[in-house]
Length: 262
Image (cartoon, rainbow, N blue to C red; front, side, top):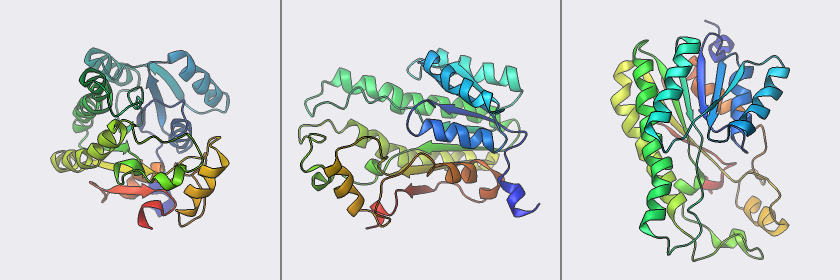
């Protein structure tokens, strides 16, 4: 196989949780452009369908499905529907996240648990069920979408002159994304014998209408001098989802312009 051919996802079926947000849209686009039959799934089916329709208008094979990651039966139903429609599941991108519990350090245990239900328990459940389908073919790729916030603590300097950060903020997002890093290693270790690879990307800050002070200060802390844009994740997603990365598993890859390396 020629090296460029190894990046093709033609003949493969992919599921991405979420898909209408900042990272999700470009991830869906990259998978579909590389040839995969792509399913995007979240609770907000109407919003997903708008995005899926835009991609279908371009000739890409994208389907929107309803999925509640806090509900095990919903996860089971979504996986079953994809297999029923496509006959297989080769790629899982764990992209969806709820940030409803990020408000305060004084968060109640119940609120903390509600976030963990989706971002930790749901992540595990859908990974386990997708892997069961991948085992049937002894191959597959699972990519977790983490964050630089799972690798580092917050840097208050980035937020000076803005109201974006409070020292009374909840640690839940950092807690969950940090856990995703080691969950990736664990899942890779138990699924590798079945030819299933599990990797994690950790994106940096995404340029999206932030205050000028934050953009300036955050950018100064990267090596490339900028925040991420709406195409920066496409290449690494296709690489990890495809046969181009067949000997990579258990990796946590910062995609952050050098922020965590500085």
